[in-house]
Length: 304
Image (tube, rainbow, N blue to C red):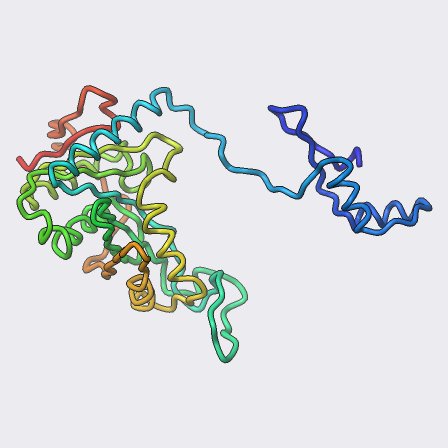
């Protein structure tokens, strides 16, 4: 056991072994001890107090100094905007998927076998699906804009624009501002000048100011869209072979819950390109209002 035992680097009292009862019983038998796997399992659990567990992913990889303060700040913003009847939107890109006859995890009822390619080579498919989501925290409604190609800041802002045209303006027609909750990285990252420039353009198109609050680094799982919309979209796509964008659109629209979640799926009307940058004029003038508290994570794009 000594060569197959390890411990926790932060707690010397926690030990684990990756050897199974069958392995241990087999080696004991080779040394003359007649014992079965069930007996070994009983010794491990009852006599030694061990149990079969897996590692828990709950240790933060990023030590952001003002992590709790930003969470409290976001909580106050959400209450203020919802009390005023202004939209609070959680945005993010869902996991990208290969389009084509590729295997996807999950099972579905069928009267025959579904055959897919034995290797997931992108060259055998029709591109990579990028599903960008916009979730209305108060109304439990969302929109997913489906694009094939790179994940860009333009796609993020187009998704918000489509949400407003399809769902938002009928409920928030008189609002003068909205709140965006988003992660720190990706196409909507706080370091993306292009995202800020597109937000400024979007604010002008909608005629309202857009307040942005980024979750601290390493805290993307706390973004509401992750556990209130994306998890149900994943369930709706289980076992589905995504041959085309239209197949993804049809099944994503079926993502509903007992709490009346509604998801609208649309296919992007334009082609997005990677490698674009914010204009030099925008970077030089920076017509974005950065707030006093953690200005990198909190800022506003005004309509004018």
